[in-house]
Image (tube, rainbow, N blue to C red; front, side, top):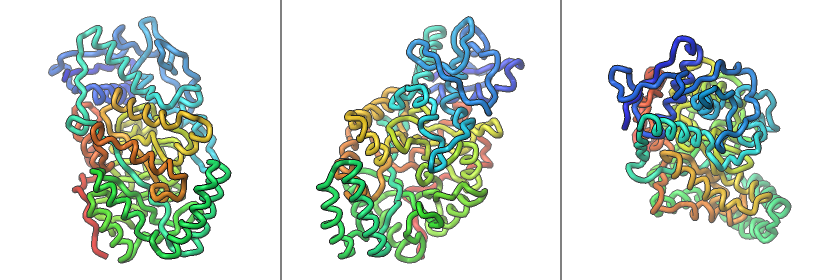
Length: 471
């Protein structure tokens, strides 16, 4: 570990928080400590020939320009006479500043994937471009000053993968279940050309629904994970005011009993922010409060449909709720790193120009996005493996893999997508753990990297596994 000081001259004071945030991402990835100059092994000055600075950064209301390529890397800012401003480039990815300036939304209200940095520039999002820029900065400093990379994994030797499941369906009535089976069967026939799967849904699936055997399906998944050494996060919807929300009731003795049985296998419970949870201030916090009545140490969430307009509105809602982590940064229609960073890191609050206390756990692999990708890309399976390879190469570990419960039970998508979840789990390569475990592991490193936010804005860490209140 190198002890490094970063000096930002007064002429760059307006961008100093962003420069320090980007430097913290580098320090986190490569095992360095950010300290005061008096205690440093190396002092870096922003704007020096070794650490060039662009004359000014664009206003946040203006989207990033199309990048130019330099040494195989995309640059969104001008180069100086001494080379690119790598800290500005790292900030561009890790902060999601470009998305904050994107005004149009897709039919769900998200920033369209076509408008994200990588996809818009026809760059493969399977490549973590932000992490590649971080590594380029490390090579530059190693060559000039001998600053040796000393990364250590979050898992004490092996990289962590966050196993997570958004619970979007539980059987509530025969009518609702029949409707769901019919929708999934139609998709199997028209989108995935799997008439055999459609037939099984309408015969064996309907029989299982009629007999009530679907009621415990998610608990059988939880048991299978436990038997394979997987600890997973299950996110639950507690509001059903929109047709795109789930229909189950997240309250009462039956629901509490289900959560208790799942938690007994070592799994975590979290919030699945409803479709309308960000449409008014305080709605997401209400959903946290509702689930906290059953799960007292609740600490994180993922947005339903990955629905948020920008990180600025998301951060405010998460902080109001007392969240410690979020796992919404992913694609709904493709595989890859939306923010270009292959490990967890704090969100950056662009409104207040400061580091947020909420940690983002990237979600580069999601079952429905993989299924979408499979309709246009024969190498979709290889892309999933490439993501895990990139995590090992560039990151500390700690990204999330997301599979929905009806997919794992073999209903929502053809069986090959359920099988893929278990095939990606390699116990000799990664430890698959809860998102709360990843958040706890990375948060312990933030102060040393200069990424710690105001401690008064951070809720206490949870215990594990989550105790569930009786009800």
